[in-house]
Structure formats: structure tokens, C-alpha cells
Amino acid sequence: MELKKGLEDVAIKETSITFIDGELGRLYYRGYSVYDLASFSNFEEVAYLIWYGKLPTRKELEDFRKLMAEERKVPDHISSFVRQVSRNANPMDVLRTAVSMMGLEDSRDGDTIQKAIKITSKMPTIVAQIQRTRRGQDLVEPDPNLSHAENFLFMLHGEKPSSTDVRSMDVSLTLHVDHEMNASTFACLVVASTLSDIYSSVVAGISALKGPLHGGANSEALKQFLEIGSPDNVEKYVLSRLSSGQRLMGFGHRVYKTMDPRAKILREYAKQLSTEKGLGELFEIAQRVEEIGIKILGNRGIYPNVDFYSGLVFYALGFDPDVFPTIFASARVVGWTAHVDEYLKDNKLIRPKAIYVGDLGRRYVPIDER
Ligand code: ACO
Image (cartoon, rainbow, N blue to C red; front, side, top):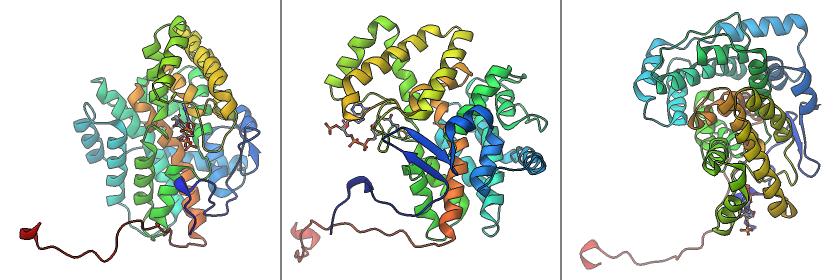
């Protein structure tokens, strides 16, 4: 039996949701380039595309937006739980538990996508509640008249965001919606393949996304820039980090061997937002890390990934670094649930093998004789 560490280059399903060309640095959702979707589309339209496989008509999009907007409120007992724990707890742990609590109230039966719409609509409400509680602020009710991205920022700040902020948030969410068979999507599928329920799958997805090698890298990348402090310190910092065996966070990817297209797009939004919000120096630091990092690691196919600039965008929009992975989860839930829905159409229990390397036939020694 061949050992495939980390399941590298192992395909576990066919999909028509997302295609990544890791050599050329291209990404397509349902056949549409993310460059086009980031330029011309929006989060709701892309979520519809991912779930239903086609772009909606105007009427379909209007109805879909309305449906999502109506689902934004979270039950009071979940909000009180979030209020109670968010000052000290890790935001991903709070989000994971809140989604789990949502599952207590929904029957196990029913359409996966209908449930996915409910979860996706509510996650930003929970994230905004986590962030506001951390700052000792009152909660802001969702506004059903605003778009998904605009309402997210409205619930965060309690006032209408600028059009640049809304566009930056919308594009960031759009770019995080799906990414083929990443660790968190795989975790969702493992759970779904046992015929468990969609809430349990999403909880597994959040749990896997939390780690710094996956979605947790956005906050780590930003913390790196803050720690560097000045563009003049970048070279020394990067060299000492790499020579001590630490990884450059926001760099490297299992599939991309060149620049992640999402990082290219987000770089422009990070630049615009940081200039507007007086964070120009932080952007300069990031750009310098990108330059030096590519000089050192580029020949091994290690380039900036989505998390490199997304953190700067989220920071400029007013989120704490520890909260960034929950924003990622709020978008990726679309891909998680779409992959679960696709997988269940032809389900096969996911049950790989392990190669046993231990002893056999050992004699059991009674406890008093050990
Ligand atoms: N900085 C320095 N060296 C790196 C980096 C990095 N960011 N990424 C990979 N390498 C090196 C490893 O040290 C290893 O070197 P070695 O062969 O000399 O031991 C080699 O590249 C291969 O690394 P692996 O971890 O085996 O490769 P893998 O494909 O599993 O790595 C991963 C992918 C985990 C994302 C890695 O690039 C990494 O740790 N990056 C930093 C964390 C990060 O940004 N994660 C976000 C990924 S994107 C996402 O999940 C949304």
C-alpha cells in the first residue's frame, strides 16, 4: 500500500464547482474566472452560482437576496451565549459553538442548500457580535435592506460603510467562497459521508479552518506585519524568521506554485484601503515582505497566498486580527456546503487506511507485574 502523506495529489471526488490551475495561478468558480467575478459580480450572485451551478436571472437574484436577508437574525439565546464568552474566547471557537447551537434547532432532514442559506446568512451576524463584544459595544441588529457585505460592515460599526469599504468586503468574501479540496472542505466531507448533518459538517469545517496552516494564516500574516513595525526592518525580520526554521505566514500553498490570483486581487484592495485609512506604512511593509519572500522562496514555488493580503483588508475594515478567520469561515461556508451537497449525490463513506508499523503478538502483562 502506498503512503500518501497529507493526501497530497489524491483526488477524492469529481467536482464541477471549482478549478484551480496551480501552475498558471488561475482560479475558476463554475467555469468563471475569479478575476471576472471579482470585477463584475458580488457575494450573493457568486453564492447562488456556487450552490446552483448557474448565474441567476435578475428576478432569481432579487428573490435569493431577500431570502438571505430574512435569515440574518440569530436566536436570542445564541446572541447571549456569544456576549457571555467573546471577551476572552477564541473567535473561531465561539463561531464553531454558535453554529453548533444553530443545529440544535433545525431538524436533521431537509434540503442541504436551504440549510446552507440559513447558516451563511447568520454567520456574519455572529462574527459582528463577537467583534463588538470584544470591544465592549452593544450589538447592532442586521438591516435586511442592505447587501450581504454592506450589512456585515453595518453590524460591525453601527453605521453605513463607505462604498469602497463595501466593495472591498464584497470582493474579499467572493474570493473566499470556495477553493476545491482544501483541508476544511475535506473535513466537512468526512463528516457528511457518514450521513451526519450539515451543521456537524460546518462545525468540522470551522474547526479545520482555524489552524494557522489554513485559515488562521490571515491573522498570523497581519501580526507579522505589525511585529515588523517599519519597512526598514523587513529584510532582517524575514531572514531571521526563515533561518530559525519558522515559516513566512501567508506564503506557500499545496496547489499554487506561483502567486495566488486571490492575493493579486486583494493586494489592490489592501493598497487602496490602507492609503485611505492611514495604514500606508503597513501596506509598504507587506509589499516589502512579498518582494523579499519571493526572492528567497519563489524558486521553490512558494509565493503569497490568499491570506497574505486579506488580513490587511480585514484590519483596514476594522476587524481585530484574531477575528479574521471567522470572516474567512463566513464566506467559505458556501463552498463547504456546496461540496457536501455535490458529494452526497453519489455518497461513499470516507474511510482511508493507515499502514501499521507497530508490534504484533505482544504478551499482556498484568498491572502488578509491570
Ligand atoms: N515559509 C517558509 N517555508 C515554507 C513555507 C513558508 N510559508 N511554506 C512551505 N515552506 C517549505 C517547508 O518548510 C518545506 O521545506 P522542506 O522541504 O525544506 O522541509 C517545503 O516548503 C514544503 O512544505 P510543506 O509544508 O511540506 O508543503 P505543503 O504543500 O504541505 O505546504 C502550507 C502548504 C502548509 C500552506 C505551507 O506553505 C505553509 O505552512 N504556509 C504558511 C502558512 C500559510 O500561509 N497557510 C495558508 C495557506 S492558504 C489557505 O489555507 C487558505
